[in-house]
Length: 279
Ligand code: MBD
Ligand code: FE
Image (cartoon, rainbow, N blue to C red):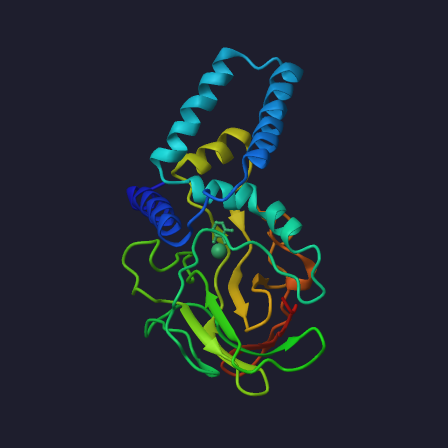
């Protein structure tokens, strides 16, 4: 890999770490009883693995060095979102009757530019990728349309880079907020993202290499859909035929999240809407 990849991995890891510290006021509100239970059970799991597989000092020290490197590379958000978040999301949303969601991942930024009910995401004049027109409606589980709902969209570019996490991209490139009309409808113009490889030069890439895994996620669009009186829906949408739909490194694909794009004269169009659960 090139030193440019290296710069990008480090930049995106550190940006994701800073972003998390800025946005999430996490960790202060967990009751002692829960910390005691959960920390004990995780440690019990580690101890059991060590005994079962007779883990050696070499392996223990490799783990220690790797854990230090995860922090040095700013890759705790990446590591946790790729290998842990999907089960948190599963448990957090199992009561829902509305649309399926999936993990947020490390690259969401709030307050992206507002584009109304029908508009384009900010992009460069020569932005690569097939033009994608996406129409949809946001409704409540009782079928009523949700006007004024917010649809926040963010995705990687045709080279697999996210603005604000890779150097050299305009601040809000391929990030926007749409607001549904009084029928709950929206129309979004963007470009189709490419399959995405998580940064390979940092600690997460080391783990992937050392274990003989791959670093790919299928091409995906990220969304957060919100409306007053309803639960926030965080989702990703995928494209049929992507070879990584069946072996996403982040285990975040569900059949309900597959789009069915149709070719048009200028690119492709897709219809996909959201049903939100009342809160
Ligand atoms: C991504 O773009 C992503 O969506 C996830 C979940 C993890 C790493 C990079
Ligand atoms: Fe992503």
